[in-house]
Every structure is written in C-alpha cells, then in structure tokens.
Length: 127
Image 1: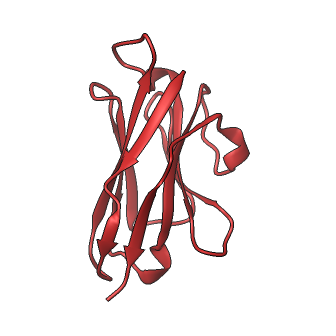
Image 2: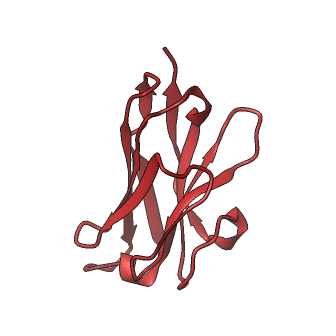
C-alpha cells in the first residue's frame, strides 16, 4: 500500500518562499519507489475546486499547470521524496496542497488520474 505524507506548509508573507515535501513509502518495500510512479501536486483554495499544480513522471519529466515560472517540482529518488519549491508567493497561492501518485508513465493535471493521495498540508500567504 502506497503512502504519501506532505510537509513544509505553513504561513508565509507575499513574495516569500516555501518548499513542500511529499515523502512516498510503500509497505514491505525498500529502495527507489519513485521510479514506478508519477507524482502530482495539487492545491485547493477555500471555496474552490482542487487544481493541478505540477507533476513529475517516473523518468523525471516535469509539467507545470496552475502556476508557471514561480513553482518548480523535483525529486530525490534516494529519499523517495518529491518537492515543490514555491517562490514569489502570492495570497492566491493560499490553500491545502496535496501530493498524489499513480503507477503510470505520464503526467496529468486531473485529480481523477491519481490513485493515492496524501492528507495535505496547509499553505497560507498573507501579510
């Protein structure tokens, strides 16, 4: 069973930065897990639908969706952790950020593409 745990959220001021982490683990399995999964980052602002933010494939291919130029996704295959570096944060970046996984080769911005989800981490941007 795949488990995803997000961390790194919290309050930040406009113009600031945060780095979110998504630690991926699987019961009874060691070694590199990310080589078998596409990992996506999503966010959900209050009163809005969840939207795709970024995605990284098992081979390291990357796509940015909702935010381009300010956010970047990366992965540490030894630590089985996917990161979302968020720079020049704006109040509209406020929301709960989730990571999700699917055993697939491609990326998608649609949440129904993914099978496993983390519990989310809150990001709040205000002055």
